[in-house]
Image 1 (cartoon, rainbow, N blue to C red):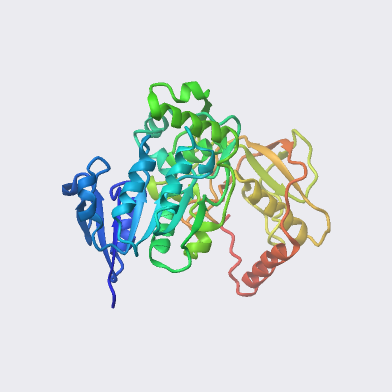
Image 2: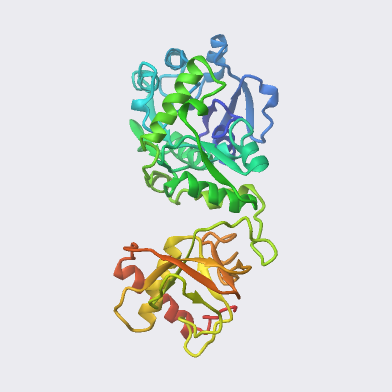
Length: 422
């Protein structure tokens, strides 16, 4: 078995740490953990290695004999020159993976990020460039938002109304592992995002669910967002928020799944891993703020109330003791589509915006079943739901997708497994 030597710069960072863990688990990889203070590198299977952008004299020893290197771009004005100088001492046959950022061609000042990437492209080494969106880890880092979230219940962020496709740094690390070791990625620029683009109000809502307390988004001006910074850091941060407001971080790619074979983690999954999820119960539900939706085949009006004690849409002859609703539009769309299909009608059904008039709890039929927690944000109540609006022109599922769901329900009935806990 041939052993490959891989240098990970920034080994204690947001992507470096999970990447080193992935690499160390492989018996054919020798992992060098680059850090300005090697005494702090304690991960099993990782060899502490002195590496500092401020000490070029140490670079030849750090890169000696490596087959691949993961280069975390330093956010400083001289990064293009530093990375170019580093690659001059990297062995000619080594493959280099650069951690850049999404839409790097629009990052300044003076095309700074482009010049960083060009230093890698022009190095004469085999290379791959990773361009990720905003890390989900900013929500757990005291240098960013965790204190405002936990202390104030606020997410202060300059979005200009645009969305962000947040990505888990662990998914970036997983892509980096493959691009460092697998064939087929040389010369590739890989744009990495999470599985969905979220508005900042929706992001705050999901953060509240994860933290177990209400969180609201507070829109900032870019001047407010960069207050307290200066020099190059201020220019770079200002340009980053300008790109946010221009919608450049809103796009979604499937690169994580194409490279690793599994989908990118959702923000809900990240939060479930990071924080102990607070169950939604009749005694504790105030942190779930809505909006809420209900899908049905029935035609209702604003002000109507949905109450328990009516026939179930999903089991003939069954009376529902609860009324079910959700915080996710797509879940309500499924409810509308399945209710009409099971009733044997061709009508599209209806999706309403509702408000619960009493306490509510997690729907036990889906919570902690296929996935940890309650990612579909499905709830139930024994109190009425009041209709406060209707969602027009909601996006339905393709017929074959809907039929697949109906076939699955039919199979559960045949097996006697269509049990509803009500």
